[in-house]
Length: 109
Image 1 (cartoon, rainbow, N blue to C red):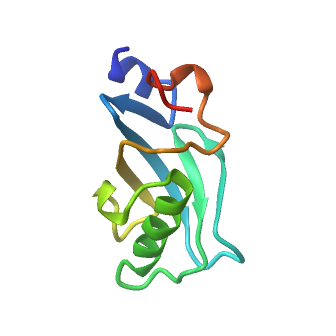
Image 2: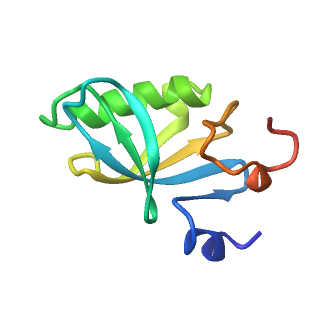
């Protein structure tokens, strides 16, 4: 699968076993949650306030649990201090429902 062609239509794509996700963050939310795709980004809300990257750090901890990976498996490519972010998640063990099953690499359920 060509990552560029998938990225042009979606908020995520695969680079080998690494999932790349474009995120629209919402800090200071009522609860931590993964929302719906909004254009080419996935809305992710977190309870932490946007101060000095704390909301992004909280988001990474939250998403590590959602994807079944250690914190070290998630890299913030850009947007640590911005609502527009890109994350790389190495070898996710589980995927939230909004990720289309047809785009999973072989062997991942």
